[in-house]
Length: 198
Ligand SMILES: [Zn+2]
Image (cartoon, rainbow, N blue to C red; front, side, top):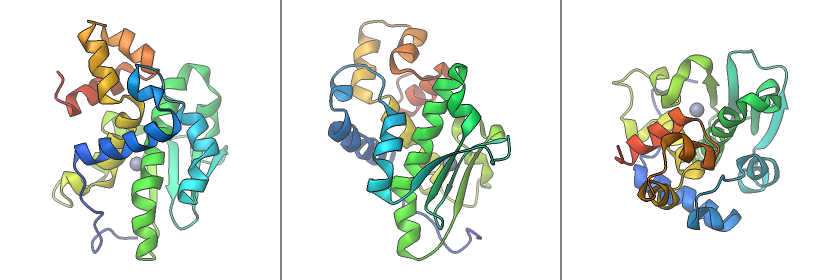
C-alpha cells in the first residue's frame, strides 16, 4: 500500500504516555507506583488479541533481519521466534513486543475503520528510533508518524514516567534503572530524551 493518501491521527507524546498508562493501570497497576518491569510478554500473549483482534504468533518464517511485523489486514503480529527464545536478547525482545503492541493498539483500529491494510515491519537497520527513517522526512510530520508513535508507546509502557523519576531522584545509575525496568540502556536513554530528562 502507498502511504500517500492516508496519514495516521496525530498524537502528542503526552497523549501516548497517557494511553500506555491506562493499560498499565488496568493490567499491572503497581508498575505505575514503583519502578518494576512491566510483563509485556504476558500482556501480548494473553490480552492483545482480546483488546485488538490481532493474534500474536512466534514465527520461524520471518526473514532474519525482521524482528517483528504487524499485518493489519491479516490481524497478525509476528515475532521472530529466535528473538523470543534467546535469553541474552530478552530486553530487546521486550521492547520489540511493546513497539508492535503500539501498532496493534494505535494503528490497526484506524486502518480497519477505512478498510485499509498495512504491514509494519521492525527491521535490524531501524535502530533506536524505531524505524522512523523508513519514511522520508518530508513525507509525514513526526507526530503522525506511526513508527514514532509506536516507539513512544513502547517507551511509555516499559518505562512509565513516575517510577522513572523516582529512580532518578534516588540517584540510580543508568544501568541500575535499565536493569530495574528490564530494558536496554539505549532504550532508556531514548525514553529520557523523549521526556526531556537528560
Ligand atoms: Zn514499527
